[in-house]
Structure formats: structure tokens, C-alpha cells
Length: 149
Image 1 (cartoon, one colour):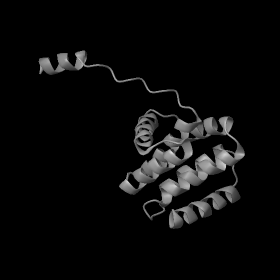
Image 2 (spheres, rainbow, N blue to C red):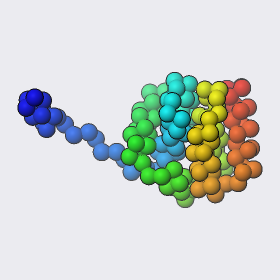
Image 3 (tube, one colour):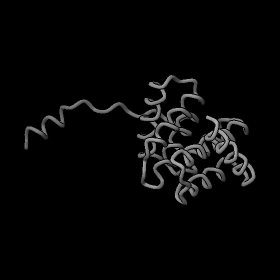
């Protein structure tokens, strides 16, 4: 038992997490949407990886690494609104719409819309300074993307 404690004390400390920027904040919000129903499905993980790759010009391995960082950020994270405010302050209106569309894609990834997921999107939508009309349009584009992409 004491040897285990000594080994734990000698173990290298984990790398500190980076300060979230708009890209990491969006990634953490995508993870938060997926985890909000307490079911982190492979479809949602795959969709998050594809979104991070598409939005950030990353290859699949880089996107998966970014998602892993975002998962850690989400666990230590501020409120959804704080992440959304970080995005709002750093990107254009169009990019905020794209962020909301990406969140909708995660909700739709497993084919089931859950109230918990929609609640996270509603909080993010408001903090992003977007209207319900913006959210409805983003959801419609996400639904189209899911059918065609």
C-alpha cells in the first residue's frame, strides 16, 4: 500500500490544460452537449471529431487529440455561458451561427433529441447573442448536413 502511494507521488504530473480559446471553447461545448444526457455515444464522438477537423483544418488524429483536450476542459470547465461568451467575443456572427450549427449536429448525431442536450444549446444560443430564429436555421442546416454528409 505504501509503495503505491510513493509511486503515485513520484509519477509525472499531467500536462496543464491550455487556456481555452474560441476553438477549444467550441470543442468543449460540443463535448458538453454530447455528455448532457449522460450518454456519450460513439456517433457523437465521431461527429465531434469530424466537426473539429472541418472547422479547424485538422486531420483525424489531430481532431481526436483536440477532442480529448476539450473533454478535459469540459470537466474543469466554467459554465456553458462562459464558454459561449468566449466564442462570442472572439468570432464573427457567421462563426457563431456555425458554432450553433455544430452543436445541433452533435445533438442529431445519435438520431435522438434529448431535452438535456437542447437545454445546453439554448443556454449557448443566448450567450452567443443569437436568436431562436438563428437557432432554428442552424438546426435546419444541421439536419440537412446529417442527411447529406
